[in-house]
Amino acid sequence: MGVTGRLEVEVDIKTSGDVFHELVGSKPHHVSNIVPDVVHGCDLHEGEFGQVGSVIQWEYTVDGKKCVAKNVVEAIDEEKKMIRLKIIDGDLLEEYKSLTFTLHVITKGDIDAIIWGMEFERFDDFGPYPTAIIDTAIKVTRDVEAHHLNA
Image 1: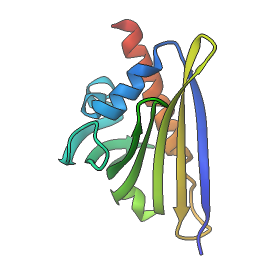
Image 2: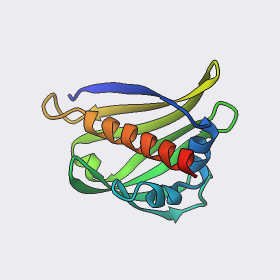
Image 3: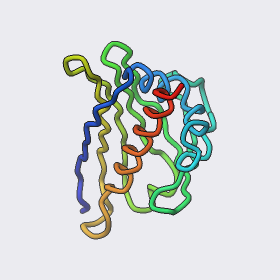
Image 4: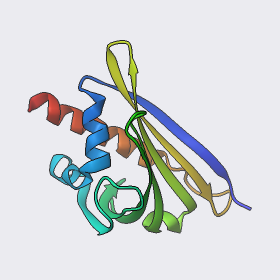
């Protein structure tokens, strides 16, 4: 039996959280234009961008390694500004039996924050935990924030 867990980070941002929710939820193919050193491609395989059930393939780099992941959009909640993506194929499933990402925008007073969550199950007790993926999510958040502050 493997190890299950959840990692979560909250990143305060200086731009509107609506930008992140719309970008990841409806326009994920634009991420590679904003953060090309991390996200190299985003292709729609089934459905439509912004729709639950859509299947999207990502090409990206984590810790200097180029990777591919295919996910299905499990949920988009416009009111709560939450998106959940489940990995269904790719490099991540070599180390993890299952992996689900959640992006949630919250407002704290007059600032917004992005909460990146990862639920995972490892095949066994050994090996790395997905902290490098969380670090990459933080970098993408900061780069998207900088892009919109400079626009």
